[in-house]
Length: 100
Image 1 (tube, rainbow, N blue to C red):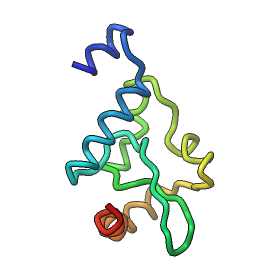
Image 2 (cartoon, rainbow, N blue to C red; image 1 turned 90 degrees about the vertical axis):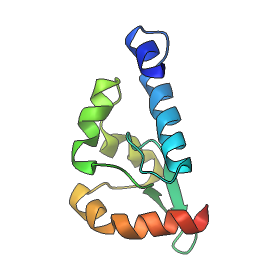
Image 3 (cartoon, rainbow, N blue to C red; image 1 turned 120 degrees about the vertical axis):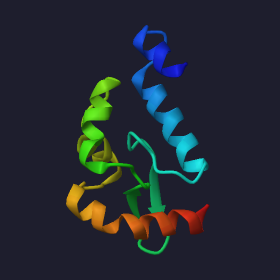
Image 4 (tube, one colour; image 1 turned 135 degrees about the horizontal axis):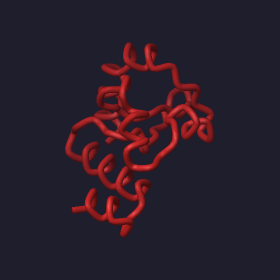
């Protein structure tokens, strides 16, 4: 329903991304658009919460009118390297579960 609202210009892509990502993470799944950021309490560094299919996130973001994830996360002092992120993903999922 929300996707249809975005298509019909009755809602923004940002609203869709925020809603879908929050719901997915709350259900113990990975987010789709990378809109949700976590903070590591030990290192005090921010990170992109668990993300599904990081290789294609920018394609999904573009489909709903969002810019590149690497640009979006700069405001949290995150430098996104997709290959490194994929290696860290299992650890990020564990961290997210612990901090919930």
